[in-house]
Image (cartoon, rainbow, N blue to C red; front, top):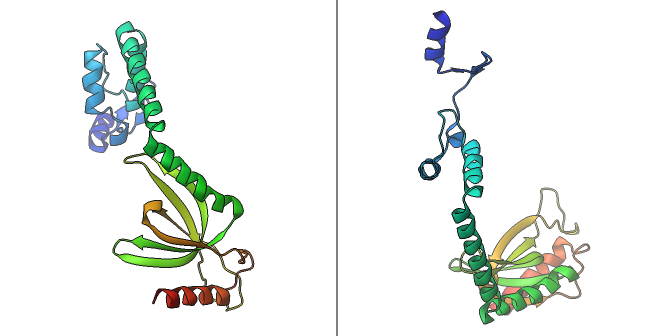
Length: 205
């Protein structure tokens, strides 16, 4: 009697072995979409079934259905054909060419003077390119992952740069790029860095 009361007060469940179980978290429960689809497949959903367990039951039911298996195969072929068509398009090839051109800076560990748009502002800094890739999560574009110098307390004018400020931009936001061929990223000092930026500012004025 006392144990039953405690269960009600604490919202605890009881497993078959007699162990106390806490209620399932919201992210463990099946989604409404899962439950609706499971009903269409004739799956009996138990009260304590988790999202992952129901997903496995759905996969098992689908594998037993020739119609669903055939439909999934058709969908996969359609997606493959669409992907091939997209990658054969002039637009995609242009993105691949841009990706290849910027990747050369990664391989060379080049130091660049980069000017780019950031919202309504024009930015300029000395950067290095860490990664170049085509982002196709939406409208495809070439994304640059860049590193710029980060100054820490105690750094003097003659300390070398720490390339610790990572950020990403689209190639479309690049206004201009200049390779600083004579600059070694390992040996570049804060004094030299400031001189480069000052010269860039004067050239832009």
